[in-house]
Length: 117
Image (cartoon, rainbow, N blue to C red):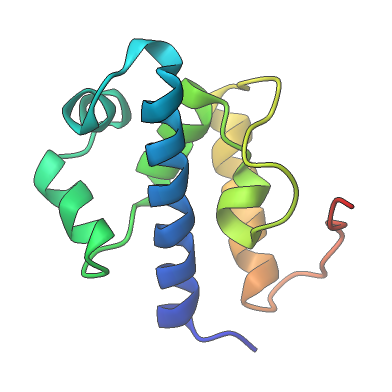
């Protein structure tokens, strides 16, 4: 069983990786961390804390990242599949998926997600 602190650190690392890729690709018209932070509804200082491993993104911020940049909720939460999806989805669907994936990680729900090859 994965520890919550370690799991949170892994999610934060994937969040930062997706952020850097989104900025590098200029997704949704963003050019820098300030633009990114505003788009996901987070303070720029908190993004820096995430990079330093001091803070983890909230479910709301993860959801906005999925909606705004097409990042896969499954990739963010589990590290499975591709970083980006071809669709963006709505906030209710994404929040439901993020919650379900978190339950899978902590063993409160049977895992039905298959790792992409």
